[in-house]
Image (cartoon, rainbow, N blue to C red; front, side):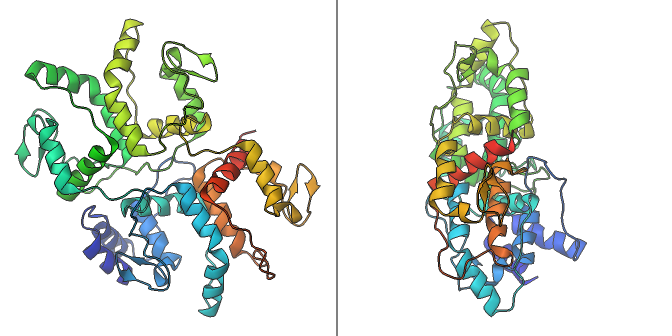
Length: 402
């Protein structure tokens, strides 16, 4: 219970740790589980993973917890999932050594636990700098949100009270809400003579921070932080009509930009802002073609984002070719085979399965070092940069989809 007590005093802006405490008391030692392959994460379950796996014995959260490893809630700059995976991989030998000194069991992670843990770290601001709620309050007023929405009892009543909706304000959920409600909000603004605002990623981050500290209800929704399922996203890209205007590698409509290889910002905040800023032109183009702008659920948005990752709309995904070459350059083929060529002590990396998501790759990288003999004793453990993990992930995820 110590980690829960500590969290409840330090993560008030999300009120999530208090819920973790309540849930832990209610369920005692029963794990909070979700079904496999659900493209959402549970930050509360991730907090339990953080404690159950012993992470809190070495790592602190906002100054509370272990002191032998970095504080994981002190993110000062934007970091990606690949930065996290690279850090976990590079520090595995030292972490395993420290666990052995303490006679600790080497914990393993499955894909579900990995995703939940990432959602928990996301809630603490590990990946993006925490927004400024004071600036967010100003954004809420100057952008005209206050004319229709309330927060903390201040504002209009045309739209829902953003402080009591009980919904998650993770960027994917925000992007979904901005897309679904954009047309009706635009019409309401026009009717009331309110100029439709544009948001920068920083402004949206501050606005989210303001909403978070004001929220009077805990979200009951699953948190969508990582991209969802590639296959579902490819199907939805067609079913929801995106393909009517957008192409990917030339396949699809040509009235809007080809989304493959765009290399735009990898930030989900940037994506959420774009879904709002570009909604008027996109909905107008769809209506001109006789199409009804589709409604999306958060899980569907997560799946479409996974598909966009796969066609390199974002900057994070790496190169399949470079990932394959890296396996040889880093000495992985000394133990692993690659298309039947190389070592025979470990599985063939060209035939791996179920590594088709960032959460699965991160779990696999971590588990590699926790098995007996997983870390060589001769100091030959290779280090990886975030870009290396992106390339390896692209290769492994592509191989898993075959």
